[in-house]
Image (cartoon, rainbow, N blue to C red; front, top):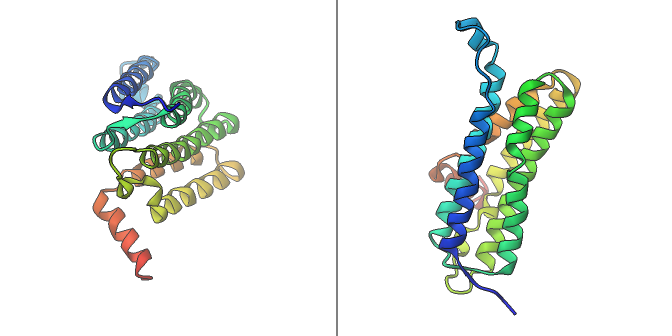
Length: 202
């Protein structure tokens, strides 16, 4: 038996979770030990990790909002994969706090970077399944997994960042996450140019 749920209710549920996570992250940011520029600079990595995590969560919320504006009903499969994605996303504040306190340690950097990669992969899978199981509106053009060139750029940045982080400086992984988050939010016009260039073999 296929259970169908109104996508608006599910969207509200996900929105609430994302909003709570953003709030939890900012509450974890410590106050500067001294009220000076140097005191603020001492927390620069903390601010950077918070910024990256905020961009990740905000990007998922924005993409999720656009997708569910078109999809009206979802089934068990969509709910299941989104619950897995939500579980992974809820780990973002934890690993953000860990990596911000140990920016030059390899273990937290690798865990944080791996979480970013997993979030990206699961989001693409979740949106693909949501479109595929849309019983009422066939929105195949919304399938995020079609952005092949964009994802190749993202994963290339990840690989380079991980290699530099492992062999030279662990903080390179954090920087690769920031660059990947920026690429993830490229305007749709640029994405279409990349897709068209690939289609026409340019």
